[in-house]
Image 1 (tube, one colour):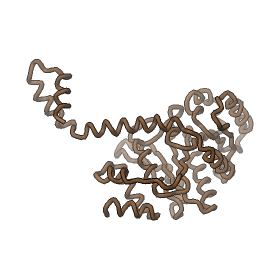
Image 2: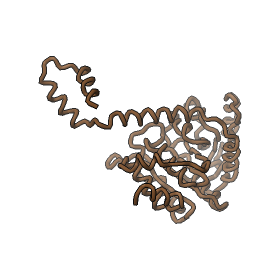
Image 3: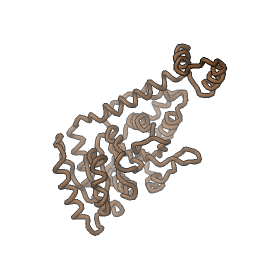
Image 4: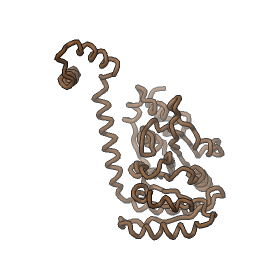
Length: 303
C-alpha cells in the first residue's frame, strides 16, 4: 500500500492503517518522511496531556475519561508513553495493559510509545505521532507521560491542556514540584480523593495557585476517584472550558523550534555514519600532524 492510499485509509477511520502509519513514522522508515509531509489538518482536535508522579493513578484516570467520553459518542486516541525496555528498547506496555478494557471499543485507539532515552516524560517521536493521530480525526487525543517528576514539562508545549494528577499523599512533594511541573498545569486533579487528607490537600493546592500570575485562565482543582469513575464529568467539563478559551501556548513555539532544530540537524547529517567516519579518522591519524578540527571541516565540505 502506497503512502497516499495508506493516509486515505487513516482518514476514513481504518485503525489498522493508523497503527501501520504510526509504526512507519516511529521506526523512521523511508515512508515516514512522505507520510509526515502529506499531513493536512481540517479538524481542530484537542490534545490533553496527563502528567504527574508515578502511582498517582494517571492510567486509571484516563480509563475513566474514556468511559465518560465514549458513552457520549466521542472517539478518543491515547498515546501512552512508557519506560523503555533496557533489552529491546521498546515500550514496556504497562499503561496499555491497565486500559485493556477498552481494546475492543471501536471508538478508542491506544498506542504505547517507548521513551527511547528521551527526557521530559515524552517519547522522541511524540510530536510526529500526535500529528498522525490528529490527522485520523479523533474527537480528543490524550497523551500520558511516563511520570518522571518536576522535569516533565515538555508536555506543556505539546498539549492544548495539561492536567497534573496528584494524590492526597503528595503533600510533602508539592514544594519540590512547585518549581517545575506545578507551573505548567492548566488543571489540577486530586485523584484517590476518598483517602484521608484529600480536602486539606485541595485547599493547600488552591492557596498555592493564588500566587500564580493570571494568564486568562484560573486552574481548577478537581477531586476524582478514578477507580470508581468519579469526577470524570467535572474533568471533561474543565478541559472543554479551557479549550474553548483558545489561549496562546507560547511553550509550543519553543517545543516546535527545538524539534525543527533536531530535524534540520538530522537532515544535515544524513550523509554521515559513524562506521564510515571511524574509517576516515583511522586513516587520517596516520598523519602525525592530524588536527581534529581541520578534519571535521574537510568532512563537512564533502557533502
